Length: 142
Ligand code: CO
Image 1: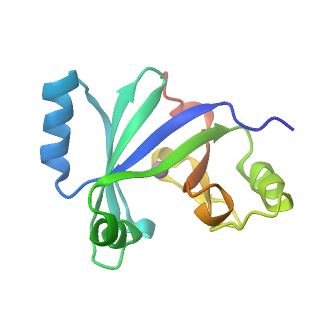
Image 2: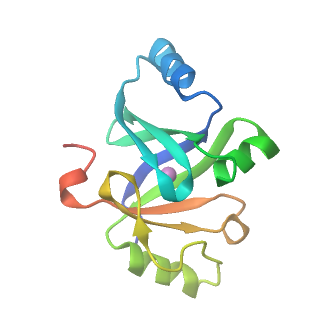
């Protein structure tokens, strides 16, 4: 079944969220649509609108967060791509049936009151993939 509806966001790991937001504003005129601390992941994120999608700038809020480890290993850069799906649980089941390992077998709450699940890069051509189910009241266009 066709699962992917749109690009929800592209996640970029950064050291300095404020400086990164400023640069996106200066270089592209990009505006912040939303800022949120996601305690489960130990990150603060800033979403910048790009059409109906977002650039998600991510910075760690504690040293044991996966984004902190990513920055140590790779430095700043592309961290993950997030696809919008209608039903996160169903999409994860279909990915699992393909044989790819999941990071989240059970969907969990994401920022903006979305429901999310991550697919491990080892089964996805080296790309960390997030599946995002956007509930009606939090759609990007509103
Ligand atoms: Co994300």
